[in-house]
Image (cartoon, rainbow, N blue to C red):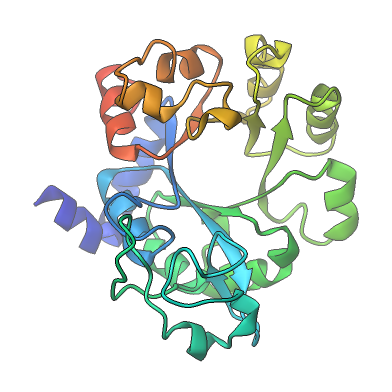
Length: 288
């Protein structure tokens, strides 16, 4: 009952939710929404994720032939729908005819949503929206966020250094909430981070790494002392040096997975197991 109330009356509890979110020591991001219970990147998956109490949902942007900004991870719709081809092969009306597949591959009645639909569904809640695969669509996304009054709920991101983002989007860089994605496997990782910190205050830094030996993982206070957060993924092992969700849930080894990530400074964790991670963090009094 509580979940149902939260889902359908989110705007009515927005102030209470925002207060609770501010007290969370660690934020939880649902990767492509709650895709274990609804098709990935579907409107329903994002609503389900909001209802269980995540702080952020992550989604991926693509553009149709007629310029609609839709939610789709892959370069084609082959894997996730009963259609074939790239999103740009279709107009919005055409692409909406395809059904999204669920986790076992069955075609459902869920359709590919637009960014506008997602933002309107989450408007007024404490849930932020992380715009992955969005670098080529910043201007279009910004216009949609302005139209829907949800600019403060969106987190733009890219793997580009500060100068590249500044040169490509000089009019936007200081108007948006932004998060750099930094590979700690690269020798210039610290420089990329410090360049951003000299020029702006990112919402967070998403740190990705195949090996867990970077000194930045042991000492990232130079990030958090500025007010920026540290985002670490607990998804597949190649993003976190092997400290992943499956180890935490399937192997029941929290020590070398979620606990390791927490011990290395994460204040945001992106997960494919949002329900389980939320429950775990609540037990540790790190999330309301």
